[in-house]
Length: 322
Ligand SMILES: [Zn+2]
Image (tube, rainbow, N blue to C red):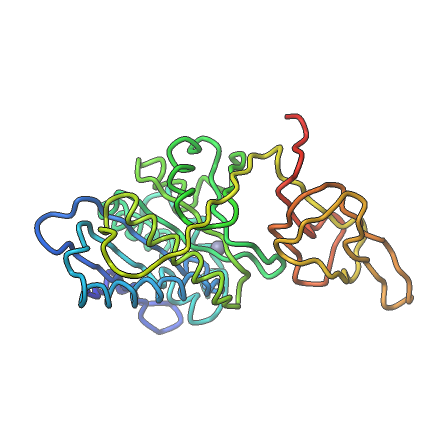
């Protein structure tokens, strides 16, 4: 394994920004295929950093014991936005820019856009496949899942189905995705999966191990690793859901949301999910009940709820008609 410093920029905050990349080369000859794993574009999402660590440890051991397993090239960008990772912030410090909304614009006078442009070019030119790993925001806890914009369904869903996640969610396009890393890689014909797992500012080791197993399976599936190492891996097949198969639970009032929902829980229509309370007046503002039968793959972790805020999402048992 080699570690290289891809770029070094001077930050307005005084410290140099260095983006590092680990590369595992094939045992012999040219790589059959190349894959890149990216984490930390959002600096407060640390589950991806841990998944990259698990991958790197596994691959380093494999290099020592089964070097012939490497038929392709593996690149790991474990902290793609180091300044934000060090600060534990979603946005790049000083600029208050979302690094994963900075792709596709090309180089400009803006430092974050220039960094995004150079990073994109490095990933695009060294990848036949890519995986961008994220956690949720501060509000929502997510079961390990892969999200796919509908137009890439046919090329990405078979790959995502190898990744040992619980859910593959094929969702409609929205303008906000146009400037993301994965959307631009897919447009540049590098199939790129987006993993969402856990919640920001936390690490869920069991979720991370689940995704790590899936990413090793993916590398075997696309012919980057030979499957001759002795380690056994989990083999969960995800449920693939389309927009009409996803149910959403939202707050009708603003207040504190108190609930006992659990990720992965099977719920019935009419069942109580929790209540929104007003601690100032000592009143229950709203009793929240599920409007669907399904399995929860997103639950609200932050009790502060505003009217219309998402409280849970479920893969529906009996999908409504499109
Ligand atoms: Zn993110």
